[in-house]
Amino acid sequence: MATGDEDWTERHRPSSLREMEGNGTQMRSIRRWLDKWEAGNKPAKRGILLSGPPGVGKTTLAKAIAKERDWMIIELNASEERNAAAIRKSATRGSQHISLDAFSGGTNNDGKTVILLDEVDHLGGGFSEVSEDRLERVISNEEDGPVLVGDSGGKAELLRLLSVTEQPVIMTCNDPMRLWGSGRSWRRNRDRVLSHAELVQFKRAGNLDMRKIAHRVLDSEGFTIDPGALEQLLSSNPGDLRALVRDLQALCSVSDGHISSDDVGDLSVVAVRDVQVDVFRAMREVYSSKSGKDANTVLLNSDKDPDQMLAWFAWNNQSVFDSKSLQRISPAMEMADRSLATKFTNRAFRSWYWGSSLTSQSAVSQNPITSDPYLGFPDFLRRGGETWRSRTVVDKMASIISTSKASFREEIWPILLAVHDDSLGGDSSDFSISVNLGLSVEDHLALHGIPKSSKEGKSVIRSFDESARETEDEVVIETAEEVSTNEKRSDSNNGTQFTLDSY
Image (cartoon, rainbow, N blue to C red; front, side, top):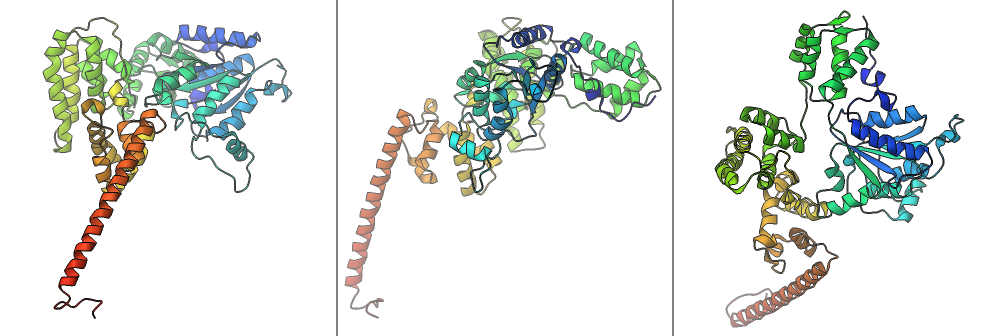
């Protein structure tokens, strides 16, 4: 039976919330939010942020809402330009008026226009606003006027959209931390967004939900499947609904109306699924696992490399284990750290393997304090990651020592940060390193993580300027002394030594 060339993920995309499987609690919360819009009672938070791994139905949900309620939809995704001007022109302005359906001759004049911003965690830059004058000139396409590149001002305009919209705004993301940013102000950024939008965390679908979807797709296409074959297919799927539908399409394309276990086995031979487990889920699975082998497999499939996972364990072990357990696993953690460091001296050594294996073995060797431990983002991984701190220094120093920015950021930048860390003995009033490296006062402040506009930053700038003037005065005095000495030498040699003047 022919299956056609059409993408089944589009052909079988749910057209209503009733057809969505899994995340029942989240669905009920979203439905209550939608009902308020439909009843004309705008909710306190006019946006929702759907967070979760790829393939769990976040974008599908937004489109299903529009279809089910006969609402119009404005969609901006990560492949389009999403700077402040693009969002203002395409979304913000449309969100402040009645539904676009009223202008298109639609029958539902009381409907809404859903504003869908897909993958907002891929918006670059910070939350700095673009001036209204510049924004309007960009939107009006004035000749020789200013331009906005990339995602400039996109996050700030997103906040504005959420605060002024008269239409429901739905945003999707895989990792909300990327939206907040990894700098010192990430909590403030999070609170600013969540004061206008409800965060709804989507989880991967369970086997029961995936069975329902598989049978619905196969029934619609006129195919049957052996129960064992379906279980075999689901066992290799971590809950990615999009991947499930694509697997079914691939199986049906080589099957004659019925899918057997042999068909699923043949597919697994030729197809390798590229699935990564998010770090929080990976950590929870490792801590709850009783098998070092299983725990190590989870780590190898996580979305963090072993260097980062070691940092996550070092941070979260403190709240997961008691002091005696920490003492027992300390040698293994230390060995993992040393093995990872060998990648800089011996690339043949399997440092990543041992870095993962030792941390996973140590984590499962002890019993957690609680079955549901609190896991947090390691604060020390945030330090130095702020764009305003790293950009200028990395660019300048990479050029000075003739290396790539990536190499400098990975190998030298952490050392510079450690040297200037106040908790490790760094002193913002000591300019010797910055001066010897040829760095400006702004670079010096960046190394210490001090904002230029802060009270401390202004004090450091004054001290830096005074130090620079003193250095200039010393240079002038030294130069004058050298000139005087040379003149005396010249006078003493007038009778016997030719000079340019005498010549």
